[in-house]
Length: 436
Image 1: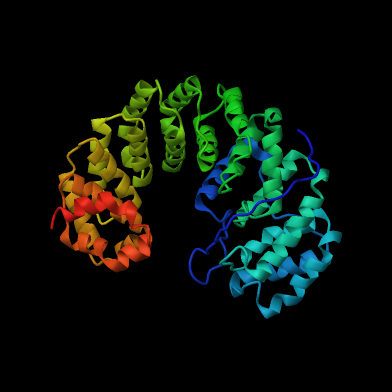
Image 2: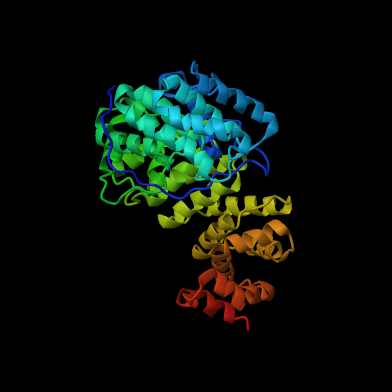
């Protein structure tokens, strides 16, 4: 383990942190993002990660008067549900910002921990940002005092508030770990890959070869659930795995560990495989597809559609897998389960590209999209381009809907979805107009 010195320039991305329901505070359970919550729970339940994970079940100790006042107000706010921008909290906010440099470490952590008890819609809400940014800056100033284990724990506090890709501390940690990744032990490497899941992009000038190099270094010891975390970090940066022997070993570990992998883990692995090289691993991928078929019933549709998309990117036509996902999708629609339009887009693309018969599913998709259900209409508006692509692949399979086509060709839809870039519509338009 090692300590860190100063940090370089920091980059920020836009992000919105939403409460569970209107009027409720920002998640009482750890982490603003559900996938981060599940990963953190996995870390917390594995003893080997105890030293590098912040214990959310144990509140930080504190001694300063400012921290005591803030913690008391935060605990009371579990019932009051008042935002931090409320006039009642103006004095304590000013007091935190004024005294932040003189506070001990434990007081800073206690305030950061208890920020979760105030409703926050946006991470850059002025008063909320005023508090967390002052603590963030002070944590960066104290950076060199803390061990790597402590840095990981502090980072958990920021990530738990949805601030992973926003705060200077997180970016400083990511950049330093990228430079020092060759010296990380197994547990620290896995936790490092988790930190990469919290950022939206990284500068193209940053050399990411170290990520794959250190995956090879730990590959023999890595477990299937830990491998899913590594894959999530790589996929988040759209970083492919180039080494074919490593890909073969990864696929073997996934196949052997399927019983220990949940739907979220399969999604992470599938996203990583989409970006990776598929040269000379077709047989291994086919073996994975065959092994996944008995497990599809326990997965929701999203990982199933992503796995199908891997087969498309690899140009592997596994009829049993495609047929199993088609039947699963039909069953979900028949049961009234809300199905994502983006998942339907992937499934329709794979089925149409591989010339599979999905007439029954296609009719159900058309009926679902033609229904006046508010959630479906909202999806059609939110994922308008996915709607266009889904219609295109249905049309390729000679399934048409006059109602949906008219909606797709309406000036309002085209203007709101594509603006002036109508040139990219030529393929869908040609097929759609064929029904006229």
